[in-house]
Length: 211
Figure 1 (spheres, rainbow, N blue to C red):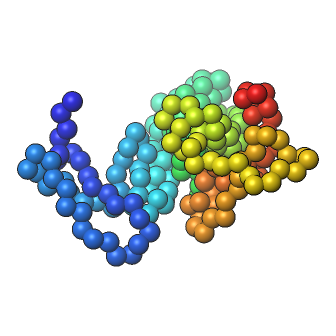
Figure 2 (tube, rainbow, N blue to C red; figure 1 turned 120 degrees about the vertical axis):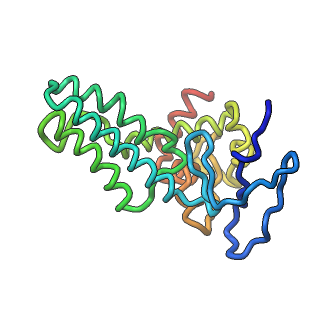
Figure 3 (cartoon, helix red, strand yellow; figure 1 turned 135 degrees about the vertical axis):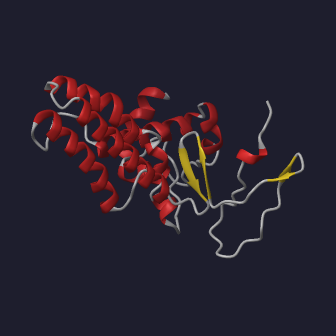
Protein backbone atom coordinates (compact mmCIF):
# COMPACT_ATOMS: atom_id res chain seq x y z
CA UNK A 1 0.00 0.00 0.00
CA UNK A 2 1.34 3.40 -0.99
CA UNK A 3 0.58 6.34 1.30
CA UNK A 4 0.12 9.78 -0.23
CA UNK A 5 1.65 12.34 2.18
CA UNK A 6 -0.19 15.23 0.50
CA UNK A 7 -3.49 13.66 1.57
CA UNK A 8 -2.32 13.02 5.13
CA UNK A 9 -2.72 15.21 8.21
CA UNK A 10 -0.92 15.35 11.54
CA UNK A 11 -3.26 15.88 14.49
CA UNK A 12 -2.28 16.13 18.15
CA UNK A 13 -5.10 14.94 20.41
CA UNK A 14 -4.74 16.85 23.66
CA UNK A 15 -6.57 19.25 25.98
CA UNK A 16 -3.54 21.49 26.40
CA UNK A 17 -3.96 25.05 25.15
CA UNK A 18 -0.34 25.35 24.04
CA UNK A 19 1.27 22.47 22.16
CA UNK A 20 4.56 21.94 20.42
CA UNK A 21 4.48 21.89 16.61
CA UNK A 22 4.34 18.48 14.99
CA UNK A 23 7.21 17.78 12.63
CA UNK A 24 6.32 14.68 10.65
CA UNK A 25 7.44 13.89 7.15
CA UNK A 26 6.96 10.99 4.77
CA UNK A 27 9.17 10.42 1.77
CA UNK A 28 10.72 13.86 2.15
CA UNK A 29 7.31 15.56 2.18
CA UNK A 30 6.22 17.38 5.32
CA UNK A 31 2.81 16.26 6.57
CA UNK A 32 0.69 19.36 7.30
CA UNK A 33 -0.57 19.88 10.83
CA UNK A 34 -4.33 20.19 11.32
CA UNK A 35 -6.82 20.54 14.16
CA UNK A 36 -9.11 17.81 12.83
CA UNK A 37 -9.22 14.94 10.37
CA UNK A 38 -11.80 12.57 8.95
CA UNK A 39 -11.43 8.85 9.58
CA UNK A 40 -13.98 6.33 8.29
CA UNK A 41 -16.51 9.13 7.80
CA UNK A 42 -16.14 10.52 11.35
CA UNK A 43 -14.51 13.91 11.96
CA UNK A 44 -12.00 13.65 14.80
CA UNK A 45 -11.11 16.97 16.46
CA UNK A 46 -7.90 17.53 18.39
CA UNK A 47 -9.82 18.21 21.63
CA UNK A 48 -12.14 15.21 20.98
CA UNK A 49 -15.20 17.46 20.74
CA UNK A 50 -17.99 16.29 18.44
CA UNK A 51 -19.33 19.67 17.30
CA UNK A 52 -17.71 19.44 13.85
CA UNK A 53 -19.08 15.94 13.29
CA UNK A 54 -22.52 17.02 14.51
CA UNK A 55 -22.67 20.01 12.16
CA UNK A 56 -21.45 17.86 9.29
CA UNK A 57 -24.11 15.23 9.97
CA UNK A 58 -26.97 17.72 10.21
CA UNK A 59 -25.89 19.44 7.00
CA UNK A 60 -25.66 16.17 5.07
CA UNK A 61 -29.02 14.97 6.39
CA UNK A 62 -30.65 18.30 5.51
CA UNK A 63 -29.38 18.10 1.93
CA UNK A 64 -30.45 14.47 1.54
CA UNK A 65 -33.90 15.15 3.00
CA UNK A 66 -34.62 18.16 0.80
CA UNK A 67 -33.36 16.28 -2.26
CA UNK A 68 -35.78 13.47 -1.41
CA UNK A 69 -38.62 15.93 -0.87
CA UNK A 70 -38.05 17.47 -4.31
CA UNK A 71 -37.89 14.13 -6.12
CA UNK A 72 -40.83 12.47 -4.34
CA UNK A 73 -43.11 15.46 -4.07
CA UNK A 74 -45.97 13.50 -5.67
CA UNK A 75 -45.11 10.12 -4.16
CA UNK A 76 -47.30 8.21 -1.73
CA UNK A 77 -46.73 7.97 1.99
CA UNK A 78 -45.11 4.52 1.85
CA UNK A 79 -42.59 5.59 -0.80
CA UNK A 80 -41.67 8.75 1.10
CA UNK A 81 -41.23 6.82 4.33
CA UNK A 82 -39.03 4.23 2.61
CA UNK A 83 -36.91 6.97 1.05
CA UNK A 84 -36.31 8.60 4.43
CA UNK A 85 -35.38 5.38 6.22
CA UNK A 86 -33.10 4.35 3.33
CA UNK A 87 -31.39 7.62 2.38
CA UNK A 88 -31.65 10.12 5.24
CA UNK A 89 -31.85 8.24 8.51
CA UNK A 90 -28.61 6.25 7.95
CA UNK A 91 -26.80 9.60 7.79
CA UNK A 92 -28.25 10.61 11.17
CA UNK A 93 -27.32 7.26 12.73
CA UNK A 94 -23.87 6.61 11.26
CA UNK A 95 -21.25 6.31 14.00
CA UNK A 96 -23.69 7.74 16.56
CA UNK A 97 -22.01 5.90 19.43
CA UNK A 98 -18.90 8.03 18.84
CA UNK A 99 -20.48 11.49 18.52
CA UNK A 100 -23.77 11.11 20.44
CA UNK A 101 -24.72 14.73 21.28
CA UNK A 102 -25.11 15.74 24.91
CA UNK A 103 -26.62 19.23 24.57
CA UNK A 104 -30.37 19.68 24.25
CA UNK A 105 -29.96 22.04 21.29
CA UNK A 106 -28.05 19.43 19.32
CA UNK A 107 -30.51 16.68 20.19
CA UNK A 108 -33.44 18.88 19.13
CA UNK A 109 -31.69 19.75 15.86
CA UNK A 110 -31.47 16.06 14.96
CA UNK A 111 -35.08 15.44 15.98
CA UNK A 112 -36.22 18.31 13.76
CA UNK A 113 -34.91 16.49 10.69
CA UNK A 114 -37.02 13.45 11.52
CA UNK A 115 -40.06 15.63 12.24
CA UNK A 116 -39.66 17.27 8.83
CA UNK A 117 -39.56 13.84 7.23
CA UNK A 118 -42.60 12.69 9.21
CA UNK A 119 -44.57 15.74 8.13
CA UNK A 120 -43.50 15.15 4.54
CA UNK A 121 -44.40 11.44 4.56
CA UNK A 122 -47.40 11.32 6.90
CA UNK A 123 -48.51 14.99 7.03
CA UNK A 124 -47.94 15.14 10.78
CA UNK A 125 -44.99 15.72 13.10
CA UNK A 126 -45.18 12.27 14.71
CA UNK A 127 -44.71 8.83 13.14
CA UNK A 128 -44.24 5.21 14.13
CA UNK A 129 -40.51 5.41 13.44
CA UNK A 130 -38.09 4.66 16.22
CA UNK A 131 -36.87 7.90 17.76
CA UNK A 132 -33.30 8.96 17.07
CA UNK A 133 -32.63 9.16 20.81
CA UNK A 134 -33.66 5.53 21.23
CA UNK A 135 -31.58 4.52 18.23
CA UNK A 136 -28.47 6.19 19.66
CA UNK A 137 -29.15 4.53 23.01
CA UNK A 138 -29.14 1.10 21.35
CA UNK A 139 -25.95 2.00 19.48
CA UNK A 140 -24.24 2.88 22.77
CA UNK A 141 -25.31 -0.42 24.33
CA UNK A 142 -24.00 -2.36 21.31
CA UNK A 143 -20.71 -0.46 21.45
CA UNK A 144 -20.26 -1.22 25.14
CA UNK A 145 -21.11 -4.89 24.59
CA UNK A 146 -18.54 -5.19 21.78
CA UNK A 147 -15.91 -3.52 23.96
CA UNK A 148 -16.78 -5.76 26.91
CA UNK A 149 -16.53 -8.97 24.89
CA UNK A 150 -13.37 -7.78 23.08
CA UNK A 151 -14.88 -8.08 19.62
CA UNK A 152 -12.45 -7.12 16.85
CA UNK A 153 -11.02 -3.61 17.10
CA UNK A 154 -13.08 -2.97 20.26
CA UNK A 155 -10.68 -5.08 22.32
CA UNK A 156 -8.41 -2.07 22.97
CA UNK A 157 -11.31 -0.29 24.69
CA UNK A 158 -12.48 -3.45 26.43
CA UNK A 159 -9.06 -3.92 28.02
CA UNK A 160 -9.57 -0.61 29.86
CA UNK A 161 -12.83 -1.75 31.47
CA UNK A 162 -12.32 -2.87 35.06
CA UNK A 163 -14.38 -4.89 37.51
CA UNK A 164 -15.64 -3.05 40.62
CA UNK A 165 -13.77 -3.35 43.92
CA UNK A 166 -16.95 -4.48 45.69
CA UNK A 167 -20.04 -6.37 44.55
CA UNK A 168 -23.26 -6.18 46.54
CA UNK A 169 -25.93 -8.88 46.64
CA UNK A 170 -27.89 -7.11 43.94
CA UNK A 171 -24.92 -6.91 41.56
CA UNK A 172 -23.86 -9.46 38.97
CA UNK A 173 -20.44 -10.82 38.11
CA UNK A 174 -20.20 -8.94 34.82
CA UNK A 175 -20.61 -5.48 36.30
CA UNK A 176 -18.23 -2.74 35.12
CA UNK A 177 -16.40 -0.41 37.45
CA UNK A 178 -17.56 3.20 37.26
CA UNK A 179 -14.79 5.78 37.02
CA UNK A 180 -14.98 9.43 38.01
CA UNK A 181 -14.65 11.63 34.95
CA UNK A 182 -13.43 15.23 34.96
CA UNK A 183 -14.54 16.20 31.44
CA UNK A 184 -17.78 16.04 29.47
CA UNK A 185 -16.08 13.75 26.95
CA UNK A 186 -15.60 11.14 29.64
CA UNK A 187 -18.91 11.74 31.43
CA UNK A 188 -21.00 11.32 28.29
CA UNK A 189 -19.04 8.56 26.55
CA UNK A 190 -20.89 5.34 25.71
CA UNK A 191 -19.04 3.50 28.48
CA UNK A 192 -19.99 5.96 31.22
CA UNK A 193 -23.61 6.43 30.11
CA UNK A 194 -24.33 2.75 29.71
CA UNK A 195 -23.28 1.36 33.06
CA UNK A 196 -24.97 4.20 34.97
CA UNK A 197 -28.21 5.26 33.30
CA UNK A 198 -28.54 2.05 31.24
CA UNK A 199 -27.33 -0.47 33.82
CA UNK A 200 -30.54 -2.61 33.89
CA UNK A 201 -30.50 -3.05 30.12
CA UNK A 202 -26.82 -3.89 29.87
CA UNK A 203 -27.14 -6.39 32.73
CA UNK A 204 -29.70 -8.36 30.74
CA UNK A 205 -27.51 -8.20 27.62
CA UNK A 206 -24.51 -9.59 29.49
CA UNK A 207 -26.51 -12.32 31.27
CA UNK A 208 -28.03 -13.73 28.08
CA UNK A 209 -25.18 -13.09 25.64
CA UNK A 210 -21.98 -13.50 27.65
CA UNK A 211 -22.80 -16.24 30.15
